[in-house]
Length: 119
Image 1 (cartoon, rainbow, N blue to C red):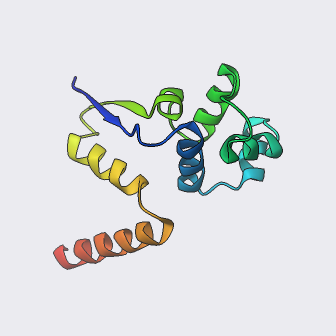
Image 2 (cartoon, helix red, strand yellow; image 1 turned 30 degrees about the vertical axis):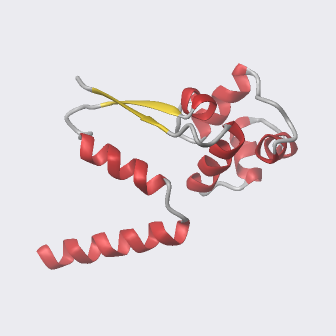
Image 3 (cartoon, rainbow, N blue to C red; image 1 turned 180 degrees about the horizontal axis):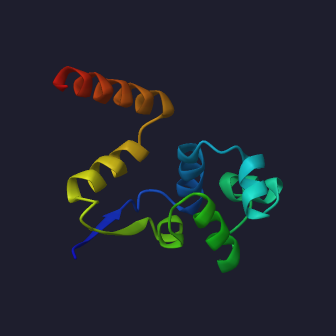
């Protein structure tokens, strides 16, 4: 088993949380419903009005956003390679998460076109 560590220390908790919320496609209201954390509290974390959340709040946010508390707090995310998750796939997913929604849609369309041409 190989461990890969991806790090993005250029951003702080607030920026990583905002990015993960955008990537998830969830609204603040939907994230609030999934986590039991008020919409106002979530907005205060994203806007920087509130400091770091407590551990239990960070765990709820990370679970709902399908990421790790470690990534939200530090910017580091350990990924474990399995037979199904190659290093290349992990790099692709990491790059994909950094794209805007419109860039993600364009990338998917390009990949589908390539797949259609090959089949």
